[in-house]
Image 1: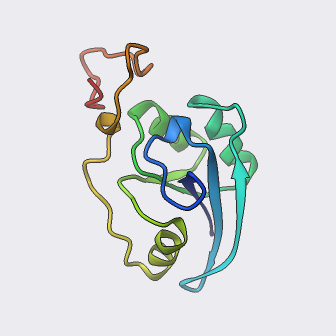
Image 2 (image 1 turned 45 degrees about the vertical axis):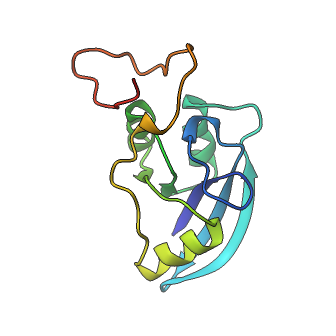
Length: 131
C-alpha cells in the first residue's frame, strides 16, 4: 500500500491545501519498505488530489483537511486519515503497525483563513467548522 503524509519535510503538515510536500511510504506486511518525497510545487487545494492520484497514493495521512478536499480525494479513491501530528517517519511506522493515534476533531478548524475564505461554500449543510 502506498501512503502519502502531508509534510513540511520532517513533521506532519497541519493544512492539507497548503502542504509543501508529501512524504510517500510503501507499506508491506506491517512495515515501511520504501520512502520518498513528492513536492507539491505551486499546487494547492483541489489540484493536490490529482497529484496524489498520479503518484498512485491509496491513503493520505494529514493534520487538518476540509470537507471539500476529503470529498475530492474520496472521488478518486484516496482514503483520508486526518488529525495526525509529529514526525512523518514515526507516523508512517505507527500506521504500518496499526497503532497510529489521531485527533478525531481534525476538520479545518485548526487554521485561520485571514479573510480569504476557505472555499468550502458555507451553505446550510456545511460541516467543516472552519469559521
